Image (cartoon, rainbow, N blue to C red; front, side):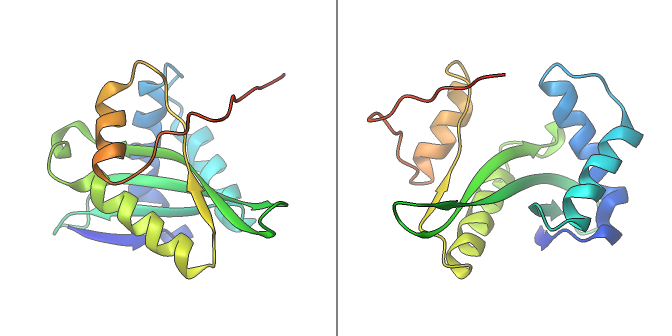
Amino acid sequence: MKIIKVALTNLDELTPLFDSYMVFYRQKSNLSKHREFLKERLTNNEAEIFMAIDDHEKGMGFTLLYPSFSSVSQARVYTLNDLYVAQEYRQKGVASSLMRAAGEFAKSQGAVRLHLETETDNTKAQQLYEKEGWIKETNYFYYRSL
């Protein structure tokens, strides 16, 4: 397994993974729409995407980071917004490798924080995050609108 930083030339390998991720989150499969979304994020430098590939260059999984800033820290932060591993590659260390790559990248960019959120019933993911050293935040409430 190798972790690569995704470029536009990797969209053919990434798009089916992203489409499967969207289906996992109860969205409709739409390869052309999802490819365009990813292309826009990369073209506009709005996201950093890492993908795990096997020895045959087949995509195994990906993680997508969005950059932001913290006013209080006056520094860069990243949101690990998406993490997905294809079914046949689960329980093989792919997600851990992707998370570590995301962390190393964020540190290399001077980020003071990398954060994520997950559904409260996604206990498998929560176990992975805690195993990887992520700390469950209990001091804040998260709100949303729209």
